[in-house]
Length: 297
Image (cartoon, rainbow, N blue to C red):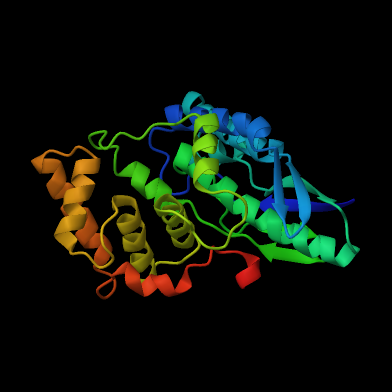
């Protein structure tokens, strides 16, 4: 048996586009991270003839969210001569949160092999945490510019929640489609039923959707992002790869129980999402069906 220590550094946290409705959204995110202290603190994975026990402490990230909420409440209740003075005294968190992660490897092999294998396992675990948290509450977890630190160096784990937040913001105008914070326990149970272990190839339609969401979160805006978006829609809606635009809109409207007016909104949204690049059948993305991980980099 051997143990490997990591520090997961998160420079960003929570929402980055808008503070609209922070009075209700931020407390909900805090409650979610409190649940994560228990539900996402320990996970066991079997891989390559070894057992990996991951123990993660998310208290540093929770404290940053709590400090952010306290600063927002301070700005709301206190008056100052200038906004500069108000922001200075509000004391928004500035330093990256540092979350300790310890991996126990059984049976241990040589130290170098254990460290390398543990790092791969932890990276997969962290990407799963990112997806679970943002499915439970969109924009609650941001890994933008995040890194995994060991004595041997830093490894990039960056994944932005900006697309999750954009989706959340679009519902503010008339509260449709309804987006609410889900039970982390229920989401985690569902996630584990969809994705098990650290397999590199999606095995079912919903795992392909998660796979596409992770790719989108790790990419800058580009034509490839549009390809992954349509790959996710086709997997979610069970359409034939390359099926026409109207079929995707119809199935999405049925899924969201949209009336005619809202179906028009969906059609416009899907159309605008598809305009940055060329015709984007997800068939073009199927050549890269391995789950993003350091193994494939």
